[in-house]
Length: 260
Image (cartoon, rainbow, N blue to C red):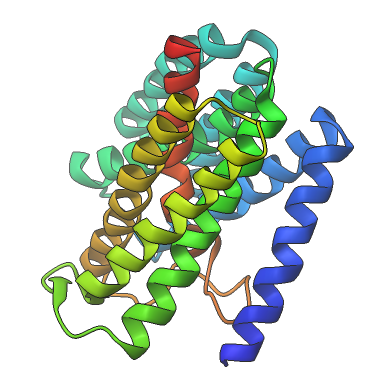
């Protein structure tokens, strides 16, 4: 299983980097595919039994956010978020199914968070040095995940947050921080960013990646599942593989938008 995990991870990374450097439209198409699968995974987690309308509404709301960000950038995110909320509220009011507001709000929050997170990947690429930013965001996130997984699996002794994720350890977290730091040290040595920018970028990613991972772990614990899906062999679903990156993308965009 470990070799399968490694092979699928390498193939996935190569596909992402190829689309990143091919152009903004191939990258946007890749993000759209990942977003759609992530939304489907979350809908299946939230509603085990659902009608086609209950499946359709969250997809429309999520895609509305993504396509608005392609056309109107940040303004599109704000406008589409409002329309998405209205769509969910109308669905709640008109639904004949016995759906309580808690289920509807959970579905709205999840689809909004997933769509927003992946939309920011495209917005980052639209920044002046967006390709370089995404390159090191991806490399740092992958390095964090790989080192945290291996060191946590083979050397981990002290549990991080056992009530949320019993397999995560402090040893794995520290190894992930170290790997993340080395990636951003490399970004400075290769003259992609200044020392201060690289250090700040490390802090942003180093904090947001494990936090995003814990959010997804908490989500799976709430729904009593091990994996969000099965589309990536050895890893699980899209939400399992991109959990840390999703939150990191939001923080990364605003870090460079405000301070660069």
